[in-house]
Amino acid sequence: MNAPLSFLKEVDFSKEELLELIDLSLHFKQLKKEKTPHHYLEGLNIALIFEKTSTRTRSAFTVAGQDLGMQVTYLGSDEIQLGRKESVADTAKVLGSMFDGIEYRGFKQEDVETLARYAGVPVWNGLTDTWHPTQMIADFMTLKEVFGSLEGLHIAYVGDGRNNVAHSLLVTAAILGVNITIIAPASLQPEKEIVALAEQHNNGALIKITDELEAVEGADMLYTDVWVSMGEEIDFKERIDLLLPYQINAELLAKTGKTNTVVMHCLPAFHDRKTEIGLSLYEKYGLAELEITDDIFQKHSPIIFQEAENRLHSIKAIMYYSLKEG
Ligand code: CP
Ligand code: NVA
Image 1 (spheres, helix red, strand yellow):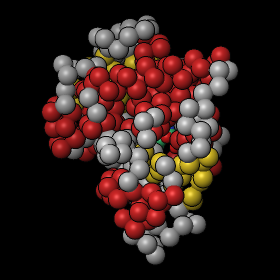
Image 2: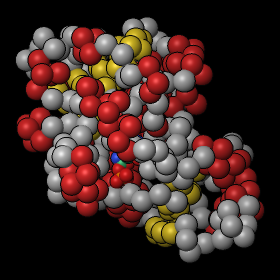
Image 3: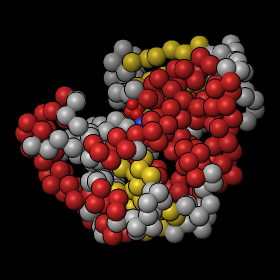
Image 4: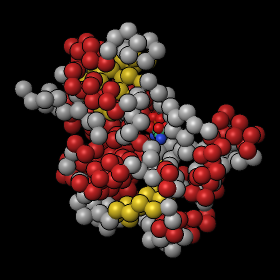
């Protein structure tokens, strides 16, 4: 029997495999739009474990699982023994004996890798502190929809260059041969191990890491993410002071020198005061918008929400790819 095909991080996959997943995602989107039933995995059971909160990833795994005909069980991390009364390895053995696949969102990459090692069934990484691989299939699928092809694209990530989304974008772009620039202050640039991975798996992309905003010049797409990620215990004010110059706003967009540059964001985003955290940051520091201004967010929201919807189609493709021959 072949080892279960998990989806833990992008570097485990070749360019051809990632492109196949992107095309499979586009195919599933078509089936969904046509309302063509696709219960290809009828009778299977999957478990979803979330140690961190989620809207998109949880909803996408739930609906994608159901659309494929599977039974989906949500296991809140506060309600199971994982990590407190039972090791990750023991939990993996138990869940793997009952479920056909497991999604895990948590803190340590090591935990999702341990889960995969002992479960004996596919494990999908729904985000860890290090990587956010399912997000990448949706993001590059969206780029393919918008530009028709990934060939020759130049993308730039601006903001916290050391978080899971920045890491994943850097490495995935390299594997796919898409030119990528990470623009972040020196203290928030990707660790050298992550850059080395991108270089090691590079298929012809130009890779640049810099603190200079001018490096957005020529970018077809600007990407950003929150300035403080889930689980980070840091001084918010310090991070704001460091990253405010890296906000995506009209001035930065103009520096691309292009009129058709698009903006993407994995969401959730702080672009107004309509969240508890957004409001409290406004009351404390007088800032209504953080990583992206509201005007730019609204202008580019059709693509940003297309990207969010694509989480469903891409997660469906990832699960199908893992389970189809099982
Ligand atoms: N982009 C993303 O992973 O969103 P959630 O945190 O809502 O799942
Ligand atoms: N970097 C963010 C991504 C959320 C989808 C976080 O980890 O909180």
